[in-house]
Length: 189
Image 1 (cartoon, rainbow, N blue to C red):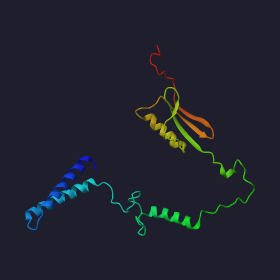
Image 2 (image 1 turned 180 degrees about the horizontal axis):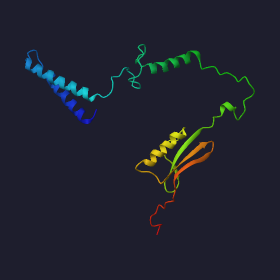
Image 3 (image 1 turned 90 degrees about the vertical axis):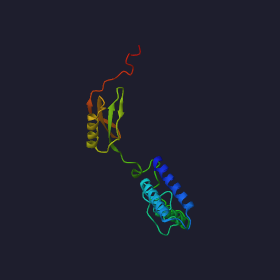
Image 4 (image 1 turned 90 degrees about the horizontal axis):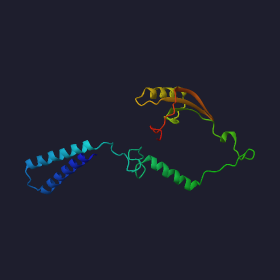
């Protein structure tokens, strides 16, 4: 809700409050129609200012989350977390199984080590060094399309390159010529 909507809604509600204080048993119908019009105007302003869906739960963390009718706050996500905690209280922590094979190596087994990752890094020449220009990609074609789009952009660099990272780095392709640029135009004279 922006400031203008907040101000208009506050004004409409204050007018309704004044109407409520002035109501008596012998209030004429014309005055009741005026109250009705002001009430409709306030409801319309409230309708315009509400931008999100009505909350489906009473949970402040997940107001529009899934509903669990048996939960006190109607939130399925929080109730699942509470049930898990209660289950752990009654049954204790999960049992730890002792290794059945040979003594574990201090360097770990092959399955414990992460597999090598393969990425393509788009880089641009900033006048002094190569710098990353975008998110590293898992697909070479996608990285080349990204560099092609960057080269067509309004603020293209003088040179781009694609670096293949696979436990080591290898420059695959270079677009343009990297020229060392002096940051001081007068060469510090």
